[in-house]
Image (cartoon, rainbow, N blue to C red; front, side, top):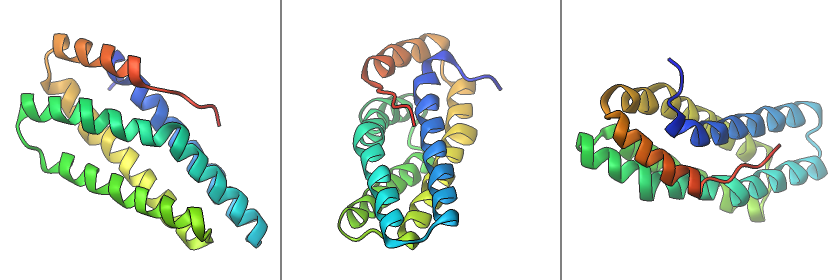
Length: 150
C-alpha cells in the first residue's frame, strides 16, 4: 500500500535508519579493525543524536498517544517503545565502548523495528484512522521531523 502523506516524514527517517544499517554492515564486513569500528560507532551515535532521538520523541509524544486515544491500547505500541529503549541502551554503550557485536545488534534491532512500524503499525493506521486525523497528525509530524542525508 502507498504510504499516506501524513506518515512520509517518518518513513523517510526509516529509510535513513535502514541506510545506516546497510552502511554499517558493509563497513563491518570490509574492516573489523578497532579504528573502523570506532568510526562506525561514532556514525551510529551521531545518527541517533541527529535523527533517531527526535524520531522516537515524535512517535512517543505525538503519534503513539494519538493512536492509543483513537484505537485503544495496542500491544504493538508497547513493543515499539521497548525497542526504542533497547536502541537507546545500545547507543549509550557504543558511546563509551565501540564494539562490532554491539553495532550488529543495533542494526538488527533497528531494522526489525522499522519493518514492524512500516508493515504493521503504519498499515494499521492507514486502514483504521480517519483521513482527517491522519492529516492533523501529518501536520504535527512534519513540523517536528528532521531529515539527515546519509
